[in-house]
Image 1 (tube, one colour):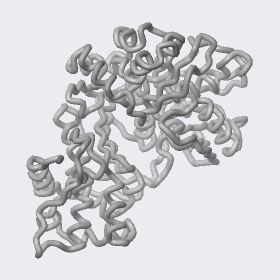
Image 2 (cartoon, helix red, strand yellow):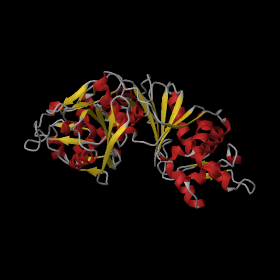
Image 3 (cartoon, helix red, strand yellow):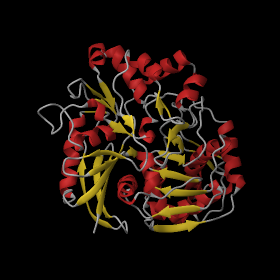
Image 4 (spheres, one colour):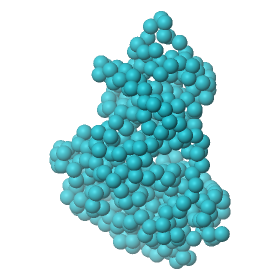
Length: 470
């Protein structure tokens, strides 16, 4: 049996799955925790990777591996390959003013045209400008800038600081893929090229940047003969993990929500609604993010003192549109639309429709309409959307997939719960051995097709047009 491994080095933890090359069957797996916080020493990820690999039974019998990981994190190295300061993660917002400064310097239209995205605080470019302004001595020492997944791949290949690695600090060996590079804010996804002018502006000089490795190409080979694929950013790896192809949309219902599509169309949205990322398969991965997803259902389940499943059962006792009740689910402000100071609002209540069933239905519809607005933004940008993979903890609720079909107007596929990012990375590892992507079968819980109920989206849009954030 030939084995391949996939890694998900996320914000919270490191997960390793080891799968059979031919069937994709899970053979064994391991996990390890990461430290909390928005600023983390990358050495903690390296230790966690080693622990997770050990918990998965090691790599001695594994032929290939790939690492998927959290995007945007700033890993800065000196000329000796040492980490200069703790990495600033995607969820560290201290560089929000720098995002505005970059957009003003280059112009919103131009920076979006060149990089595919309007910079936001999560992007690496904004963190480098913050470093230059607030820690100029550290900025001057930067000899290379890496992202979490490609730094881990480099370390796994045997590179690192002298005396602490097998191969030493060869910065030129750093390698990444287009999907992760597209989240830096200084990369052009459509041409797979870095933008030196942006790097020079934010850091004051152009350091070594990881070379871009194409899908199916080897990034590294260890001295023991283990081949390492290019890896991917977490969303791109998740798309591979569920088998999403061109025209497929992935809607993720985590604490926050994301809507992203595998597309032949590269986007350049100067409004900042769509991030113009690249996929892990050589195409585009335009993405829209919302701040409020599963937490909306958490709130109403607590209010009614019932479980999520019970909330769904109650919601389906109501008809589409919840008899006119509309929830704008901005419990923690919102990113899409850009309403950072907003609060949630329920409208349309009457003595006649004020029932648990209608409120439960309005909660699910409101959460999904927020994500539906992201789907509409992708369509308006010319992205072809033919079906939806619904993933995340809330996706398994039958009411959620049922109502999602009515809101999105597309067939809904709900994969079985799993490690989508690590599985996508395992796909990359398998492709190195097979010479093509593996034909592993996806375990699906349900598929749902229902006519789009236009009244739901119309009522949501009407409520949003009259909404006041104050």
